[in-house]
Length: 301
Image (cartoon, rainbow, N blue to C red; front, top):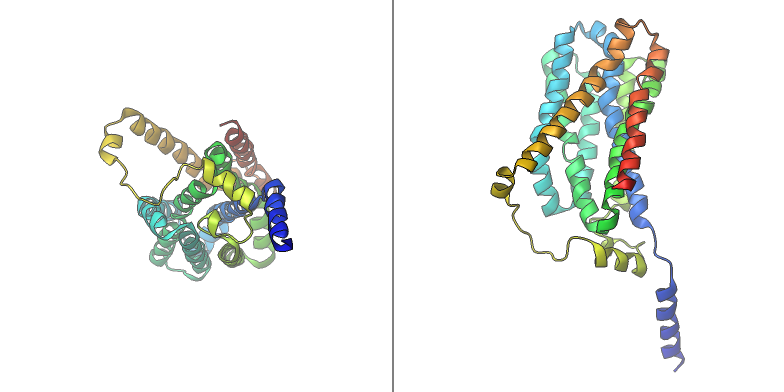
């Protein structure tokens, strides 16, 4: 009798228990992952001038490094999404963090122009799975009414990276030289990989810290209802004008973002005669604006 009573009390206490918020802590971790990813992307542009001088590299050769990164990044987007759906977000994001951190560190070691291009290409390959992995994660971890805010966490972290990267990169460069920038940022990526491996899970039902109330709320309102996989209707997509319009819009946005990411620091130094320290502050301002609007847009959507 007492055992039955204790069980009933336990069930009642669970019903009145507040939902845990593990999903939002993991979203914050994705914010940090995006932060590190975009700091790793932007640091090379901040130290472009001393790096080009040290490696005897002209602007065309330096621009090619950015193009090779983008090529590797673009080629892995769709394959990474397919793999993430098969093996889960935990493994694909862990792989991405370790891979791109290794090639971030190798950027400081390689001195040959050809090998440097290969390293930056493979760096892009490593960062490619980050957004597809996050998309799969959000599908399982967030109810449909929260997916906009969940997606904005990684985006906001990505765009906040270039806000603080100039200040950090300039400080590291002035203290230890440009090679140290890549070593330190590579270390940050490996630390993030360890944290993600320890606390990340593919689904909320697999996480030990998700309580019954949070799990119930997610499961009742998420878009994934069954484990059965279906093939995306690519023929239907490719015949849809809105599908191409969305792709064209995203292409234009990324072209402008990449231009500022790669060349804004050099422009401020050479064309506007900014000092290295003042350039670090000025180069961060556009990204601060993007960060604010991405967070706002996620909540509004």
